[in-house]
Amino acid sequence: MKRALTHLHSLWKIAHPDSKRLQFVYLIGLALIPFTILYTPFREWLDYGWWFLLWVYLVQQAAIKFDTLFYHRLFAHQLFTVKPWFERIVVLLSPLLLQSYPAGYAWLHLRHHKYADQDGDPHPPFSEHRRRWNNLLFPFMTEAGPVEYKLILPLMKRPLQAWIMKNYWYMTAFYIVLIGLISYKFLFIWLMGTQLATFGGGILNTYAHRNNKMAIDDMHLANPQTHTAVNVKNTWTILFGGNGENYHYIHHTYPRRWNLHPEADKGKSCINGRVIKLLVKLGIAEVKSPT
Ligand SMILES: [Zn+2]
Ligand SMILES: [Zn+2]
Image (tube, rainbow, N blue to C red; front, side, top):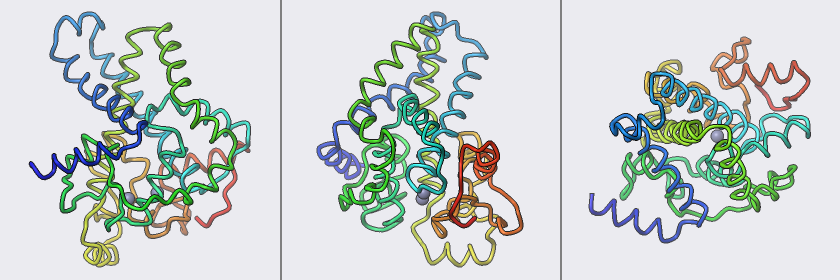
């Protein structure tokens, strides 16, 4: 424990100022959930009832969808393209996710792919210093690893990416004021829901990965449908949003596939694959990569 805390402290010292801010927002958002449930005056001030938790959950699910579909599949991996007007809207809405600008996410995530479960992985599930709770409570305090800015060079040529990086916190402030003007209650719902979505991502990164790659390969071959690293369809991940990316190991094995269903060649689609198909049908998206 002591070693893990010392390590965490060393990560804080090297963390980017944006990561520190996001880490702060994350802990506040998560802590507010039990605080709201347990502290009566605050609960009453928010008119808390079953509807409140339902809204937190709905925001969480919407944030997970936005995150997995756009941050992950569109911006980080560019598994599909969208019309420029649509991309601009997505980028302008991205601060609503309260989880960094697309380039920040893509930089982290592409390093995760390049060094998955090895030295250099920004969030290994378990390492000499790191424990699973690091990923769950401190998702923005990631391992240093190689810098690798070149991984996001193609993304930085996309519409508005450099602009949103520069103006991210101004846009965040704009949305805070806007939502606050609509309803102060919704401001808290938004904060809790979005941070619960980041928590879902932490669960995916932690529990969809095991360090023993050889064992995963064996199990993957023997039983690709049910192994947790291949298909993390369990109560935890469905509840917290892993349902969009539930074939995580297939994604690592075939990172160019936009449809992660193990039987994509037989016409089956994963959940996000179905949404991409719908966007193609609507004439908003195009897919070039193999299914
Ligand atoms: Zn990925
Ligand atoms: Zn992964």
